[in-house]
Image (tube, rainbow, N blue to C red; front, top):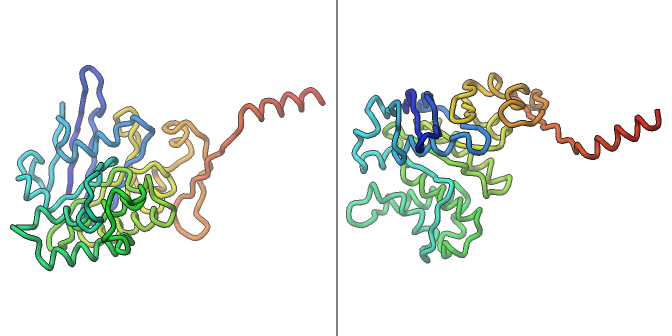
Length: 275
């Protein structure tokens, strides 16, 4: 389990995170939502140990994150960053194989190569495994990076941790769902998953628990039906939305009410003039 306890992060006088607490247990997918600048990526970086905390503490399996050996941690926890730049002419397979580095002693084994093969198949990237990574499209590169982080924590013997920062941003619709289905698959296999998303309906469909940040603080935390309410969406995201039951699933369906305000204004003026 990952425990974030009263965590704060500040840059100068500005607080980016302010007294944030959440628990992420093996077997569940926790989705992090919030408007741009709410502190989502900063929280994920804090959970990776990449930013200095100004308050609170983060625990992994009841040990402070700072107490973990780097290589020991890398064998249990994988992170898919929002931006992963790689311009070397590696093949897609070689990029995915980088995820096995914490497990390799000397040279990769047949087991490592088999894990990478399976990881690439899982994200539907096996058919371009031999292609040069820089020649792939943005979505294809994202799938290869997904295979890399999955290969890193492939072993199921111990509890694992998967942190995903906007993993579907560059993917087509089918691969958005495939990515989140894969996250749920890993959750069922003794993995704690934290996923930063922007799409409320994807969050509703795949999250066990949703945390909404606003201005660096926890605005709401709970199950999708508890958190995805019209009044919360209006307050946090600044848009009116209808929240109803999905026609086939027991999950919320969020329908934003998109209004062309200028056209509506002209229509009202025309109506009043005719009255």
